[in-house]
Length: 393
Image 1 (cartoon, one colour):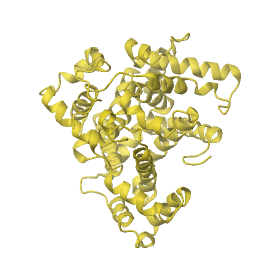
Image 2 (cartoon, one colour; image 1 turned 90 degrees about the vertical axis):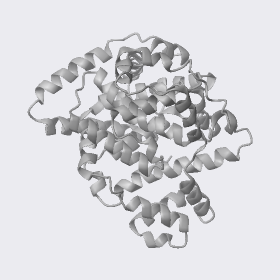
Image 3 (cartoon, one colour; image 1 turned 135 degrees about the vertical axis):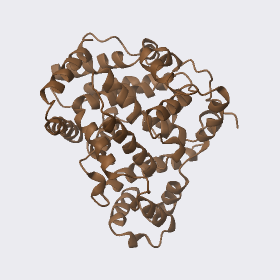
Image 4 (cartoon, rainbow, N blue to C red; image 1 turned 45 degrees about the vertical axis):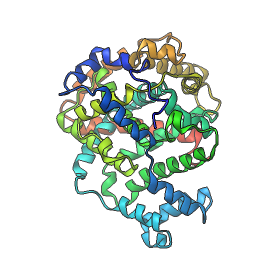
């Protein structure tokens, strides 16, 4: 099947690869992916997580939505509870046994780097990884069909924040089933959304591929890994070889447990750049839904649930907008309908802060990580207070 969503060469993302920071990454590849390789990748837009989907269908026959996730949490601690559910038992078995390639020390190296990023890490995810992804019209369609477009935007971003902050907890994956539960909940939410979207007769798989397919999940994973690192580097962060290796290892691990095919999970930066290039070079331009999503994300500080004074909310709105302009191209900001920030200096103040922190904690990295993590936890708690926890309220 030749998908309508495949627009090569894309008019949406290709200009990024002309920018110095991305061009320098591309020239490090032995070969730039050609049209044949890019079109061969299209099969992943029609590939989904069949095991997780089987689990959803299996458990929905016996449980309500809330009961389903509660049962899975209990079964992670007591796998024998799932003995009557063969697909669920298989998924739990896979989640509780690490693949041979997993190195828990490398996982902690990656998570420690993410904790060290502090509030700037969250700003990169929000204003670069998430906002930038909205420029693809096709990847946004499941949000429309699950009514997520109409959902309070702050609730969506608070759930993403909660997941990200939880998954980088210190030594999380040395602590039994807790780490598996954090990832598995999101995997099953994706499978449930896919199940309901495909029931909608208006969903057009020929136009968009399967909802929340393997290729788009890979792109999301790269947003949390490669784009996250690139955004922090643009703000002046310097990654050690150990941090970079650990960070890719962490997101390869998380992607594995989210059901992403192994060949779409990069081992290193070069592999990540290659996969991102292949995905970006076929994406359709943003549409009205892209603009609506961008607007809702931008306007989160204006939502009544978002706590703070009128001045604080205005300041956060302008700060986020300044980071959008700093990370995204002019074309992207225009395509997403983003206005110009009246306070464009926030990213440059942040670059100065990074230099100050690097000097201050040059001999005490552990203290830097500790202080930065405290700020992340404060932001997470505020989001949960304003909008509720993942899957609740």
